[in-house]
Amino acid sequence: MKNRISRKIAFCGILLGFALIILVFSYKSILMGAGKYLAPEGKGRADVAILEGAELIKEKPVKIGMGLLSSGRVSHIVVVVQQNSGNEQTFGLPDYGLLLTKHFEGLGLKRDVFRVIKAPTNHPVTLIEAKVVLSTLSKSGAKSAILLAEGFHTRRSFWTYKKVGKTLGIEIIPHPYFINYQNENWWQKTRGIQHFLYESLKFFYYILRGYIPIKSLLVT
Image (cartoon, rainbow, N blue to C red):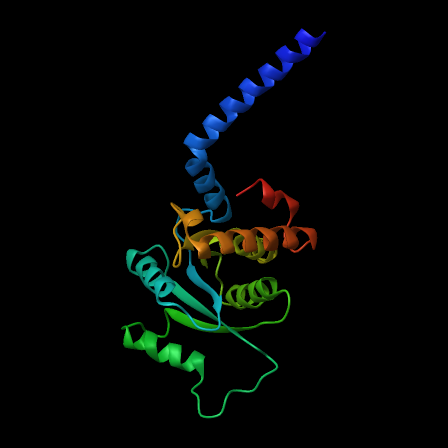
């Protein structure tokens, strides 16, 4: 009896050893796969590129949006600016939406190929933003959009926009971009680890609250 138990323990130890060896040699692939799960990237053309909302728009998504426009993958750019609907504009400071419009015009873009949409920051922010942006685009006849989202926020944002877009007949294509970390080594960056953990929790929170469907766990 003791010999049988010892053999089982030895067998389990061998299996565990093999598992550890596999983990040591493949952990990078596993972590990169986890990163790609939260930051899926689609392909194809669309009517418009949506630069997902922020209080201050970063330069990188603007460059990517311009690239999509010049390559012909989209024919319009939409920049979403998040603003607290409960606050009045700060005295002495220019309207940020108007400032962005002037900057885009300075890049040589005509007003008929770009648009600035303001979205409130009420909870749940991403869901409300998607409703505001896509309802506006639906009225202008848009049927598809490439959604530019930062890093590991992409999956939650994509599925939120996708759920709203389905009711409006608008297809959403995810397009992540990375600034403070890259998917190839995000676990080596403090910001990458923080963003991965935070967005993982927010993704499950959106599922639990019913903001996005449970199938978003398995389907891109």
